[in-house]
Amino acid sequence: MTDSSAAHLQTQLTDRMRGSRWSRIEVVESIGSTNADLVARASGDPAAVAGHVLIALEQTAGRGRHTRAWESPAGAQLAMSVAVGVPRPTAALGWLSLLAGIAVSAAIEEVCEPLRQTPGQVNLKWPNDVLIDDRKVAGILAEFVAAGAGDGQAAGSGTAVIGLGINTAMTEEQFPVPTATSLSVAAGQSVDHADLAVAVLTSLDDLLTLWPDRLPDIATRYRAQSGTLGSQVKLILPGDKEIVGVAEEIDAAGRIVVNTGSEKVVAAAGDVTHLR
Ligand SMILES: O=C(O)CCCC[C@@H]1SC[C@@H]2NC(=O)N[C@@H]21
Image (cartoon, rainbow, N blue to C red):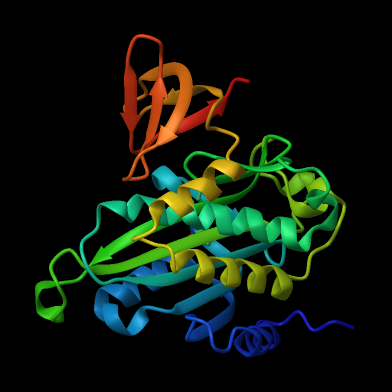
């Protein structure tokens, strides 16, 4: 029988990620929110938490974008947060969550053979929803904790906590919305959480070597994986204003640029629907 305990997963991951930027990997059976936990730790000692990874087999108060709740039923999702040191102020902070989307979609394609066969079947909806056949399989929430005045770090520096939830074994009955999916439903394959976590952490490690100095290289990879860029989209902006247009590009700050025909709207946040 395979050992699916938190302690076993932690030992496997610590072993397999040795030598990477991920200096400490912790796996817990249950937690409120892995993001909330790392954010709290980063607020106490920002420098000490960079490189930490926290995984939970279950979250009881998972956090989604726009203060929504996020469901993480026991054993059915890879729920993981990583802490990344941000040593100096940068306008490219928004790219961290986009970069995480690339890492997640690449990892899914790596571990799910059936999904690798059809390029574009796994794609990204701006900013960082990971879709399979237009249904959401993974979400990402990046939060920034600025270093306090007394931390001895440069102003504008801090820690980014990037949280990601990948629905691995969730069933149709467990989906919070009909537009959700999981790897088992979409690919008909059960995925080993250790293999998936290693693939995500390795890909993140690689992509972070390009951030923030080589944004064009990250942008090229984002565009290749994006279902949004070049498409006709509906964008609901904070405050509920709706626009329709072609998603043309992502700017240096990670904002989407939508051309409505009469103007170019640049948005840092919002909800996109792909129209075609
Ligand atoms: O699409 C979204 O709304 C973002 C969802 C992010 C969920 C992950 S699960 C691990 C980490 N901990 C949380 O509380 N949220 C993120």
